[in-house]
Image (cartoon, rainbow, N blue to C red; front, side):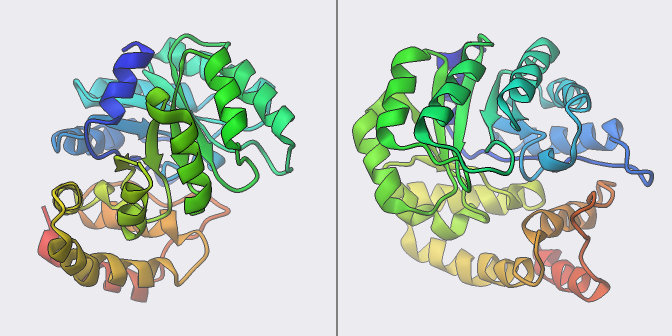
Length: 301
């Protein structure tokens, strides 16, 4: 899939980040992962992100990522697979090249490691990664890696394969400036944790889609909400928020890192042997697992 084809796919429907499955020894478990990805792909997800944030990218070694991408490609059928990518520039270039070789259709460039950087440094970082590969690249604005609109405009001029912008800052003023400045040169994706909680605001700011973490374990419900959002069925959106998303948010907010841990718990409840999260994250308590089971009960597969 060339960069423009990937850009079109990104804007054609709801997106998601499959959790990465581990066995009891903490190693990647490809067979259960492929079964899960195949199930998700059957719900018409145009793009799935392998080894992304919900996929515990931060806990993976660079050498593990190509195998995860390959497994996702094998299981996903016609669904495009985008790989997580990140850390410092040299490591990011290494990951980008390795997953391009493994068959990924593009990368999502997550924030670099630890330290803040000036706009000129972020510009050089993104440019070098983009120019090291031929497939499509999306940048993820959040935490210590927040690109300004003028920096993005320069990158668009320099990097034809930069095709997407994902926002996790929640700064609607910033993202509206970006969409106004860049226009349709990029595809815009909402990327706040439990993105459905912010979807209406991002839609108003010019974002046509987002990545849904809960798609991992309730893909039908996630698609129902997305369809209602795009159809302007506000009452239905509000009902789904009250019935599911706000209760899920309460569970997610009970512990640090539960934006990943609670999603992985949901995948296990749906019958996939996703295994535990890797440290430094922790899994839900027994009480919290019971809360998740009650929440998911109407949506069991």
